[in-house]
Image (cartoon, rainbow, N blue to C red; front, side, top):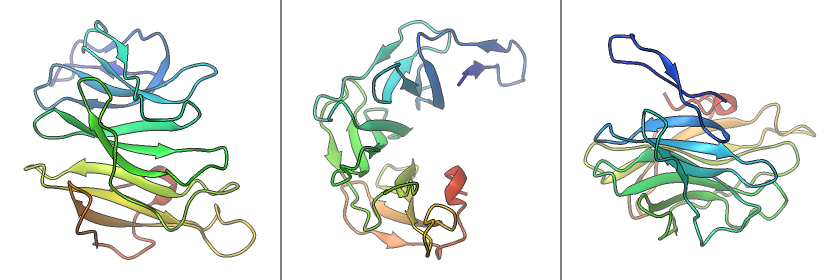
Length: 188
């Protein structure tokens, strides 16, 4: 993936030069940093922080995560101290898959917020996919994906949107399954 940064008025388009392929670029609340997911050759996906000019690039270590587990962070908390992330293992060890929060400063403090009753298996990617925090940081939205019926569960998988308190309590389904486009992580 390529990350391109432009001014608000659409001028001065420039591609960030990063040492790894990256996607899921998200501005920090103060607009000084970007959160990206990096794809390191021979290693798992990890969150990274970079300045909009490409300087200061660093991958968060996330010491509490296994090396063969992908961690893709999708949102900053409104105060910029935490990140909302998806933890997923594509090698059959899905007991830890879900939405997590971690410290933006160093990748520490990994805390699980959701447990999906439909873990990924075979060609079904599934899982809980984080969306964003509420403006006050008290809640977050995420999509829960469940497999379709039959021998190809990835073909007819469906998603539904849920909200939950930022501490992992009070989960509430807000759409029925099938309204969210689960194949494109559509959260609108």
